[in-house]
Image (cartoon, rainbow, N blue to C red; front, side, top):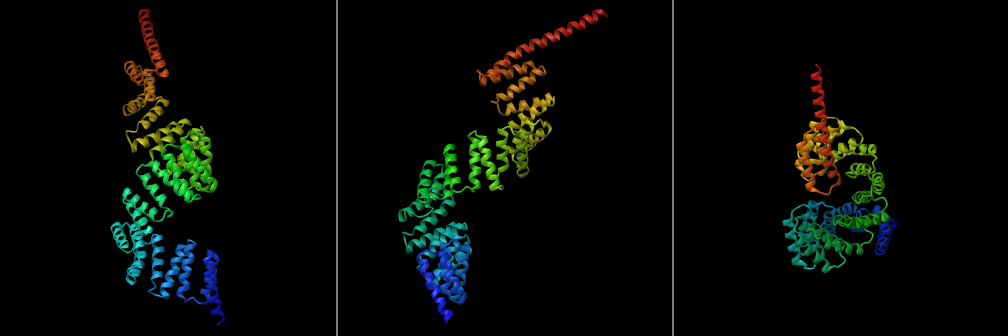
Length: 449
């Protein structure tokens, strides 16, 4: 008798602790009571409820299942079980439990409401809508129903209808968690960045310590063309959560775009220490090191990026450029050929492969690629400039002159091109004089004989 009395006392104590929201202590009291009397379904259901408050949903599901086995037919337990299963993305199990709840109590609205969520997660959106309309017949002002059907509509790209449903959620319950965030995401998907920003800020005011929200807002600011604002938000996140590796990484990316490679490298190295598995980590580290002219370290990271993404043209181009800076012309040429094997009309690869050939003295082969780069990118004055120099070197004067005029037509005030045109005439005259001198010397030699 003393053990049973103790168990009852512990359950009573658990209720008192739960009323004070002291969930961990309440759970300990329930566990002690259930150790004495494990066959009490009501206590097990209460344990599930406490676990829900602790956001230990998988454990709560186990508790509700045990309760349902001990006391079959308890609609409240079936509902709680179905809701947690839906919350955890276990749609088929959720539908099974909620169907049983509806069979026992057809007018219980949550059994329909959370089947909207379950069916939406399963991609069965028509069934989700069916549950929504059935739920509406029982209760027209359920904020959860509008939120769940909004998620179903957004998953199908029906953003205007989703925003309408989520707005109805706000009308019914202005502080409904996550709904402003959802509306912000829908506006962002539609390109309505100013509206998206309004809802992000509204959600942040409601949940100021939510770093995921701040991160989404930072991404939005960057997307909207405000990198400094994005960087400020990311630094705010890092102050709140210094070990948030993705925030350090994204800050590094934005600083690269802002032309601050030294600060970017510091942020990226921190991110790499916290989470080395972030995609594109080696690429961004290599990019920062390239901008700082630290080519050997850059090559190491870019080579790792190329191993991870062997068909990524941007990685191969950057690695090739790095190897070109290190004087590894053959290795660089190999990377540019790999790019052309993936995309034969890449002007940058043709340009850079042309440079590799020039450096090796293979002027005809290099000129072929350089002219192809100009053909693919008719406004590439840099490629034109290099092509002119080689055309002059191989004495293709007519082609060199035409290329100079073509480049100057793009930018008549380009000082380098104007200087090149002056050099062109000097070189041509000098070349003609050399040829004349050689001819005279040959004539004199013949006369002597």
